[in-house]
Length: 184
Ligand SMILES: *[C@@H]1O[C@H](CO)[C@@H](O)[C@H](O)[C@H]1NC(C)=O
Image (cartoon, rainbow, N blue to C red; front, side):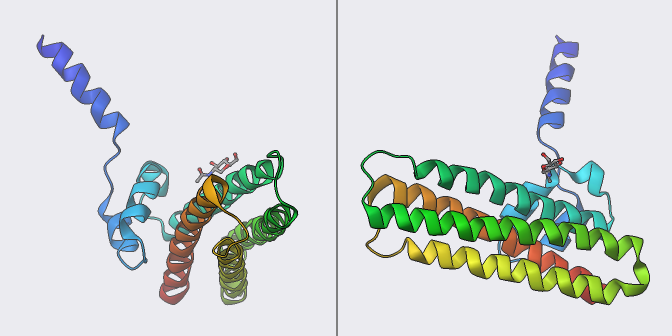
């Protein structure tokens, strides 16, 4: 009985990774600290107390979520009986998200150069800051496009909520990047 309880406790503690103080304090400067802590704590053992690893994980998370959203929005194009302007709005949104995926992918590569090529840290990190912030701005353009009357009902709601989710994760990544740049 005791060993069963022990096993249970062990399993629960594995499943719910405790956020470290490092992650919590880094996330406290972001706009969505709870989301930040929740999404990064899963990678706590990888992040440890390494600011570079923290930023790299946050950016990779943003890229992955953006890719997933792109796949989702692209699928929406194939719903039956879409009005042409609805189809067009979704199509434009996919284009915007694709650009975002490219920018975030380049940012992730550029971020790696910050570490490999430390001499040019300022140059590399400022590129990262620029590209991630344009990915964020462009994403919100797409989200705004769905704010009007072009789309209605479930498609609009589900695309919008995914765009908002991606924007939050990306906004948090950008805040952590800015913090990393400032503290370097
Ligand atoms: C993002 O996806 C890549 C490729 O699937 C994976 O290797 C990486 O661990 C993911 N990043 C995060 C933070 O989950």
